Image 1: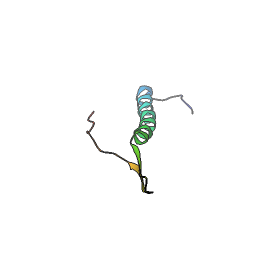
Image 2: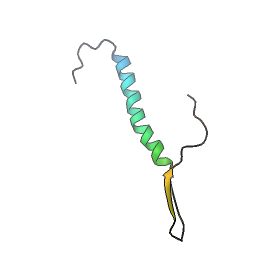
Image 3: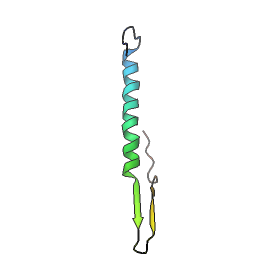
Image 4: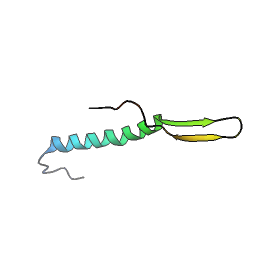
Length: 57
């Protein structure tokens, strides 16, 4: 990537950092909320649980 003549270098860095955090954080959030439920009679259930407290930043 050519980094010469970038007018707002710190703004670009901030947006890039936010993008990296989102790209890492969203998969971690999904992995932590995966659940499986199996019973002895052969029933099986799997999914993603996205419920709980709202996070307000």
